[in-house]
Image (cartoon, rainbow, N blue to C red):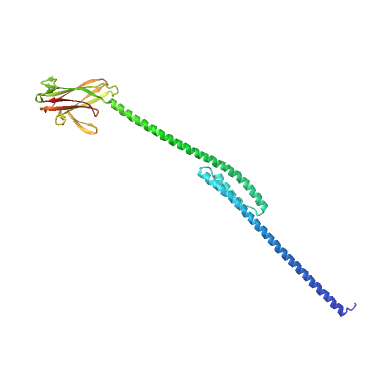
Length: 306
């Protein structure tokens, strides 16, 4: 083996050292490049991620807008009395779809477009349903108002008919009232009738009152009770329970009668007579006669004693 000189060995060592230094420099340069490239990639990816996040937020807002419109229609349909079960299911499904949106922008865009198209159709149909419900509500309001007006008109008609019926009832009742006419008084003394306008009070034993019940074709055919009141000059009515006197009601008040008589009335004119004996002397002066039937005054008369 040849012996190397010291100079040759030193030269070799220098070249080896330079090669190592150059290699280290190259490695450092490569590492620096790779670090810078990595930072750039990270920055670019950060921007991409930020952009994706921003776009995701935008699509999230758009989906939120769809949800808000659906919920608005849900509330309106509920207020209008429509069926909200299907709408409620759609809203729940939309919330689920929101949670399942992919971070892949293409998938997000496709999913959004699919959702947008689907829910646009749904909302268009719901808008039609809302319009129909509004029309039905308006028609119901109109029909209700028409019914109220008809009810008011009907109530007015019923009230008028009632008033007319009551008036007719009053007219019929008034038409059925009997009338007493041709009231005549004769005095009885010793079983003889004395027909004079005036007569001496001390000579009168009994008084006979005769009157005609006039014909009335609308009066009921039935037994009627006639009451006669003989009223003395001082205003007191003659009555004696022992001779058939008593009391009856007229206009809500009890009044005394002198005599009464019951007879069948058959809608034809009929004469009625009363004979009354006081049992004591009559008072001089003007006496009044009142004739009642069915609680009402139907005739008057009078006589004078001296």
